[in-house]
Length: 242
Image (cartoon, helix red, strand yellow):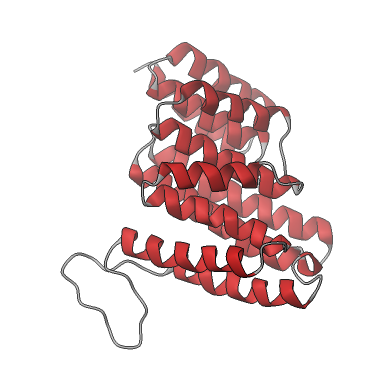
């Protein structure tokens, strides 16, 4: 598969899931957070395949990559409805917290065993996501800040995007806005300018700043005609008037 095709697949997959999340929740709710985390998981799974040799520089990285794949599968394992017992032969968790706890342990194990590999950098990012689900904001900030400082532009963008979400939950508004603006100014394959703009606009909606939100929605629509992002921006702008 050609590199540009792989990159487009990553961008399309992330944009689709993230736009769905933005459409379903203008405010930062647990449901919204879970969908964005799912989007990030999807991107990293695709990235792990697309970058190929990025994870297989040496034997240590190869081992770490195999463990990362296992941990990601844990992070995506279904959660059983309340009161439903586990079914033999099917992996599941009783709650999102149980799943996040198990996944974080696996991701942290990769960081501890292979600290100097590139795969460990990705694992730190996932430690941050799992910590966020567990409401361990101290650990989430620490790990996501490390990811945000990565030399890999895609990983850094994902780290900033997730870190902004943590800041929103902590009412650290200025820090969240700053990260969204950084992503808007320097978009990447996995976090496009429109994606960051839509999240910033949704944040302004939650902060009861409709004029700021509408300005961004109008800009998204103007810059991305005939796209899903433009359609979503138009719907959101219209809803602001009601």
